[in-house]
Length: 306
Image (cartoon, rainbow, N blue to C red; front, side, top):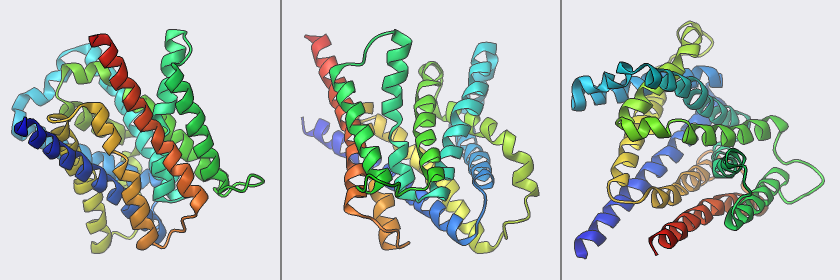
């Protein structure tokens, strides 16, 4: 019993630290956009390319040739390419575009609308109405988004249309990113799938990545980018994988709430990003849907066991 409790604490520490580092990465991205003015396309191209290379190098060191196993089957190769171009790349581009058009806390919270769109996708695919708890989640998420967008003043938008557009698209892209690779992740090590998808997703940006001269590559900028790539990609992903060895995915998903919390605290205290009570309430309501979905999943499992 003590061992189980100890393992749960270890898993929670892995999940929380991973989410915190993801939040740090988003805040650094906000700082980079404000200070060096790179385009989201350039920053995403850098992150996907070198983040993918780091993960694949890690895979080669730990697993050897198995890192290439996914290319032995044409259907899996095709599914991987689709995931890289239609799942990985859009999710990163929409998120960083939302950070650039608004700020890290807002973009991270709107990205957490992903479960809302997953509910809608699944309901449409199954030609069925959402569960009661899903309907409640949708209503709460929509009201939270409304509060975040209007700052509680219902006559005008507090967010720019561009920030709102990219933020909602980030939520849609997160849903697609979550649903697309499920079969691949059941068959192959997640490091292979994510690493190759990042590398494939970087390909449309390759020309811009290496020819764009508008961003001054100073030692300071390279240092910040290295943190985004290594800490915000490889290390956070390692911590996420380790947490799944000790915790259920639903629990890890709930602890992911530390990502927007971290991004908010850092952006407000270090970057001076304003935070009002209505926006805070809106963000909390959106994050609440993650907990409701985890609760619904847990109840479903308990009922199936009985």
